[in-house]
Image 1 (cartoon, rainbow, N blue to C red):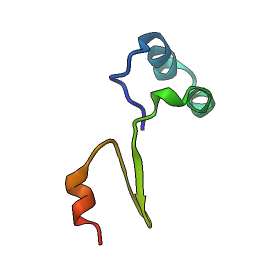
Image 2: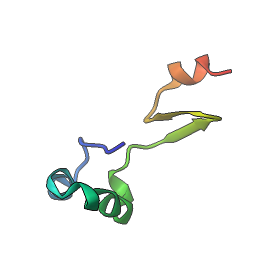
Image 3: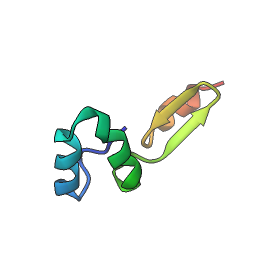
Length: 58
């Protein structure tokens, strides 16, 4: 769910090495690290641009 290729390398390093119980809070404080778009189709979802997957959805 996290875009490890993002521009803010310091923030990404912090998220990578922070205690597991604190990671979600840090990501929610910094939504720019989440891969987008998040596309939902009922119980299915994708992260990032994936038109081939979307075409297969019914």
